[in-house]
Each structure stands twice: as C-alpha cells, then as structure tokens.
Amino acid sequence: MQPERRTYAFAVTECMAALEASRKSDTSILNSLAFRGVVYQVLLASGVILLGWYLYHNAHLNLERQGIATGFDFIGERAGFSIGESLIPFDSAQSYGRALLVGILNTLYVAAFGVVLATILGVTMGIARVSSNWLISKLASGYVEACRNVPVVLHVIFWASVIRALPPPREALNPFDGVFITNRGVIYPLPVENAIYPWMGLALLVGIAGAVLFARWAGRRRELTGRNVSTFWPGLGIILGLPLLVWLAGGAPLEWSVPALRGFNFQGGTSLTPEFVGLLVGITVYTGAFIAEIVRAGIQSVPHGQVEAARAVGLRPGLVMRLVILPQALRVIVPPTTSQYLSLTKNSSLGVLIGYPDLVNVGNTTLNQTGQALEAISIMMAVYLMISLSISIFMNFYNRLVAIRER
Image (cartoon, rainbow, N blue to C red; front, side, top):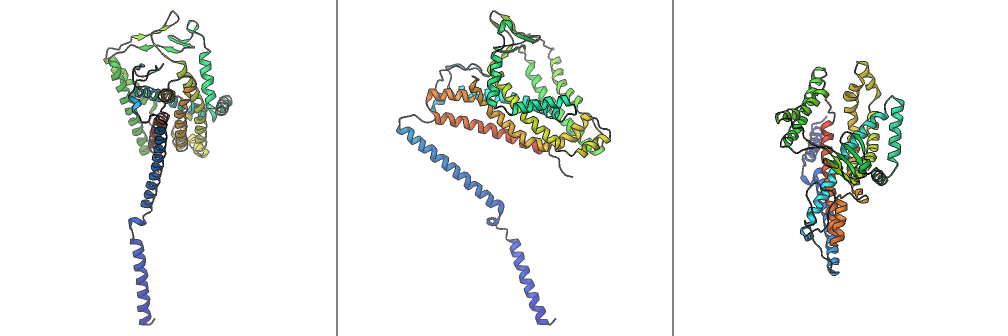
C-alpha cells in the first residue's frame, strides 16, 4: 500500500475511533434512561396530585356555595354514639377521631387473625390437594371448588347467620372445658392479669427471633457440610421454652377467669362477638380456598425429577416437602399470596353488612351524623391505602428473603 493511502486510512480510522469514544463517553444525565424514567414518574405523579387538588378544590367550592361545612374539624367534636366492640376504651362522649381509631383497630384486628388463619388453612388444603391419598385430595378439591365459586359477601352473611342460629346461653355448646359457643359468640377462659405476662410476651418475641437465627445457621451448615440439622423441634423448644422459663421465674401464676352461667348470660372469661366470628370465618374460608390453589400451583411447578432425586437419596416425604419442594415453590407462591392478603384486608369492610364495627361501619356513622362525606370517605381510603402498602412492602421484603440466590 502506498504511503498516502496508508496515511488516509489511518486518519479515517482515528476519526471513527474518536467518534466512537465520544459516543461512549457521552454520559450526560439528560441521555440517561434512568434519569428520564424518574422525570416521567415525577411528571405523572405531579399530574395526578394536581388533578386531585383540582377535584377537591372544585368540590370544596360547590359545598361552600350550598352552605355545607367542609374540613376535618369534625374529628375533634363529640361523637355521640356508642360502639359495641372496641379494643380500647370508648364512650359516646369521646370524639369522632377516637371513634375512627376504634374502627381502624377493629379492622386491623380481624384482618390480622384472618391472614394467619387463611394462611394455615390454605397451605394445609393446598398440600392436601396434591396428596397421594385419594380421599384427602378429593375433600380438599371439593372445599376449594365450593368456596372459590361463592361470592365472599355470601360467605360472610352465611357464617353470621350460622352463629346467630346457635343455641342461647342456657343451652350453649361446650366442646371443651370452659369454652362455650352460643348465639352471643364464643366464650372462653382468660388468664387473670399478672405482671409477669408482658415479660412472657417479650420472651416469646425473643424466642421467635432465636428460632429464626437457628434455622438460618442450620441452613448455612447444611449448604457447607451437606449434613442436615433438624430445626422444627429445637425451634419450637426455643419459642416455647423462653416464655416458660420466664413464667417459672415469676412464680408460675395459674389463676384463670373461667366463664360460668349466671342468670341469662355467662360471667367471667372473655368472648368473641357473633359479628367478629362471622366476619372472620367468612373471609378466612373464602381466602383460604384461593391460597390453597396458589400453594397447589407452586408445589406442582417444581420439576418432578427433583422430587424423585430427593426420594432416591433417602429423604423422608416431610423432608422432601420442606427442603426441596417448598423453597422452590415459594417463588411462585409468595407474589399471588400477597394479593390475597390485600383482598382479605379490604374484604373485612363487609363487616358493615352484619354489624361489625370496622372502619367502614364507624366511618359511615360519622358521615351520616356530620354530613361531611368527602372527608370521611377520604379518611377511609387513606387508611386502606396505608394498610395495603404496608402489607405489600412486608411481603416484598419476605419474597426477597426467601429467594433462591444463584451461586
């Protein structure tokens, strides 16, 4: 090649390299996809906020024009109505804000119990659906198909009707000693208040944390050495052992308030109202059926070859389920189960149909007495939004916690 051509080719190559380097080095923030994504989201959020402000301002002007009071000053006013079931003291002389707090706590109360019970029921029925036992599998399938295809509102009304059709206190059902089931609810014994019980609760929390740490240590040891360490019984011992030790150190108090029939009702112990029981059973049975299907799908998503390999190395069926199937199935189970938890929490608002004083029930009473519909509904929407976001954040954290990380 002639020198002139070599020089020309070298110059072109240098120019192309410089252009390429310039293109690659152009890291201006304006050309960043992440930055543009943030800008678009900020603009969208700003638009939504402005639209909401416009709608609120427009409604505020219209209400003022009609002489209807607006604002949240009513929260501090005297409520003037009673609430039949409350986790905190409340009477009609207290404020609307206190009444709404009672409704929020009642909603959280039934939702928390519902999530726990629906999870236990759903996991049990989901595992039963894939059982090799024909009868157990068919019974679980019947439960799932029957309960999933009936609207949740009918579940709530049905179980509330069942509770109210039970015998009166004088003819109460007595399945266990000290436990009575009547049309006025479920009455059961309660330990007499003692100073040691809060310390037992703290010991229980410490025991749960200790059991979790022990399980994580056992998992790391199994990965490093291949030796399995049983975690169920030691974990259960840690969880129950610490409160037991605290109880023994506090003198082992055993005084109970046992319910007994006095006149036309029971005295002593404590009770769950028919409205609470009907709502809890209704949303639990309904949501448990959906969770059962999620668990079944998660289990069946694990390749069958892995199950056969686990059995071939001598693992017992319980260990196969706990060590091989469930860790992989959780990746499929957790995300849709989060949606079911959110649905259960929002379905608790159906308690208004059977008289349970949840947030919607108390909010509707407040709305009817004050006439400030916009504010009352806004409070209810904001509370449900915060509860839903909290559940989503926790479940996303748990999903990352149980995720199987590639090596």
